[in-house]
Every structure is written in structure tokens, then in C-alpha cells.
Amino acid sequence: MAKKRVGELIKEARTNAGMTQEQLARKVKETSASDISKAERGELELNKEQLKAIAKATGVTQKSLLDAAAGKSLMVKPAAAKKTPASSQLRLNAGEKKLIELYRAANPDARNYAVAVLKGKVPTLMQNIGGIIDIL
Image (cartoon, rainbow, N blue to C red; front, top):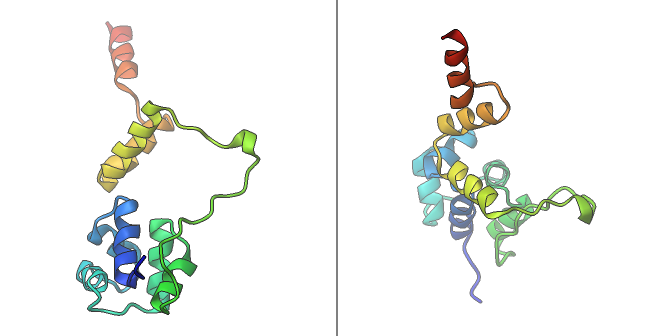
């Protein structure tokens, strides 16, 4: 397997995280969407701090991007999940997987709203209807 350039690894990590170049750039200090684009094409070399921020934002290990920048890595490695006993690991059903897909595809405002609804901070449609019925 041919060794991937760091730019290809950045793009792979970004797309796997469901992020646009603009969304990623907002999470990396002093980096624009244009800088992310140039880095992905291999036209701009990002510094160590930028690579660390990209790794954190996309959920890959910092080591995988830093090693790639140094010419050592072959692939993006997902960041290790917190170690938990096997009995407490989550298994997702089809509905839960669909929710994750929808969440990743949503814009930041929609994501924040969805989280607020799930935390019970925003009344659901049924709660609103119940309130209207109580008034009548």
C-alpha cells in the first residue's frame, strides 16, 4: 500500500468526521478553510499545533497526523475510546446509527438544537400539544 501524504490523511479524517473544510478551520486557530484545502492538496504544510488541533477536532490520534507529517505513518488511526469493560460498551441499533448519521450531516445550529431537545431543555411537539390541550 502506498504511503499517504499528510494532506490525504487530513482530508480522510475530516470527511470521516463529517466536517467541511470551513467547519474544521473554525476549530483550528489561525487557520482558514483555504488553508485546510491547501493542506489537503499538499500545497501548505501545517505546523504541529495545527495538526494536533485537527486530530482533536476529527477524532483521530495526534500521533497518526504528526507521524504522517514526519513521513512515518501509513494510515489515519481513530483515537482510542476510553477503556471501559466489555459489558458497558455500546452497541448501536439501526435507529441509533441513523440518528448519528443525521447528526453528523446537520449544521452546528441543528446539532445544538437536537442536543437541547434530547436533554429536555426544549419542549417537544407532544409537550406543546399537551400544553395547548390543557389550556382548552
